[in-house]
Image (cartoon, rainbow, N blue to C red):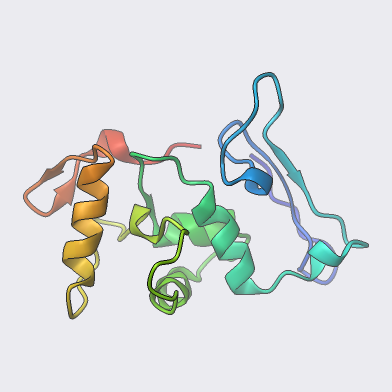
Amino acid sequence: MGIKKNSSNQGINKTSNSINVENGGRTRANQPKTRNIDSHSDSAQLDKPQLIWQVVAGIPKGKVASYGQVAELAGLPGYARYVGTTLSRLPGGTKLPWHRVVNASMKIAERGGSRMLEQRHLLEAEGVVLLGEKILKHHRWQI
């Protein structure tokens, strides 16, 4: 998959066999999974949280991605902590699959409250298997 930034570092062009942001990561039969954002469209003005949300929306059910992986795919290398902060600010009841993002050790990030348990339950409901606190490697989202 290629990521290309325009001169103002805002537009990106992604083509992948795993992501189609326009329709939540799902594709119709025989349609390429492509997203193009050119520097002349309104979409080129996406802010960092919007870029992150688009990547997270593309993580398939039963798979997980690390904060760093999401940052890279959003065109924000080195912004793993920012990804975590952005996802922690999502409102309750969001449809965005925030629970599919874990730390680099393939573990649910420690945080206070019931959010860790909620994340674990949501992942297990999608068939993600944890061995102790660690998610099995075959659940890692490969692009």
